Image 1 (cartoon, rainbow, N blue to C red):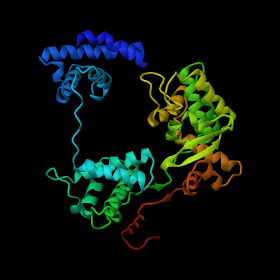
Image 2 (tube, rainbow, N blue to C red):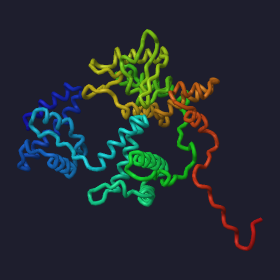
Image 3 (spheres, one colour):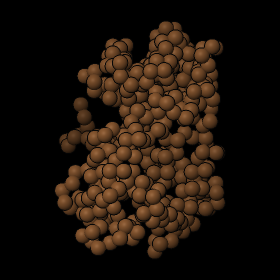
Image 4 (cartoon, rainbow, N blue to C red):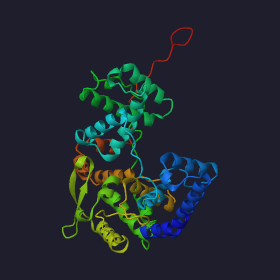
Length: 395
């Protein structure tokens, strides 16, 4: 396959990769060709096991990059497209996968949870279900209180309190689903132990005006990335959009004449919001002078590599990278959202107005955000009274 190295590099450049990145990928293809010759293996015999062996050989040889199978996807996709490498074998689904798929549909259709929340729920559910597999079989009817508490206690030895709160809430959700679906004969969600901690202690404080100004000033609007980041930051700081809502924004969602923006939120919720002039100007600058020609309908697309929309994880990194450029403390995407809530209340608005602007179905969540500076209330078990001192009663 050494003769394909140059063509592979040119193909990556055509897809939008930088010449340096394309050259680095081409080096890996040349390495794979040499490795196949040394092993005496034809390219048509490059199975999943041999790909894993090649990756292991790179790690053993001291290579610092392209040390995982996932990092080889551009090269393997190119070779498979030419028919030189066997197609990827579909992974066999086990008993845990079948339960997770039913659980995922329940979370999306019945509970109407967002993509990120569903992913987190499935992460903890997979850990619990895998721990219940015995002899290659998953017998859900055998799950009892002892298995639930034993799993939580075991996980508490590896995770911090904040992660344990997410684990226990996800485990309760899974157990309620299994009871609703008839897989277990009783609801075991009350059996899950509670994790002690300070209530509201994990709520981030909204970013102040100086921090937001520094984030916006760090964007070099003479560059493509700077125009894109500036528009993303304004959508978060002025309208309080979530990262996933920014990623879902499509060209037809912008009503330029009416000055409105259609927001596709969590649980399939769709809202229309006013489009401020500064936000509209930043979007127009990105679409006219930054976004490369594309057939995609998403507003924000990748600036390098294959033509593809930006996903939520990429949107989340925009304020983080801007914080590093500005030399200030890290400002996350949700801190910008909290800032919008605090500004509405500071201007005399109500919690109902905050909930409407941030597209919440109730006032509980914004109320928690705005009271995050109040004294904390202990949400764990009541502390035990101290023992009396030897020699009689105190005082």
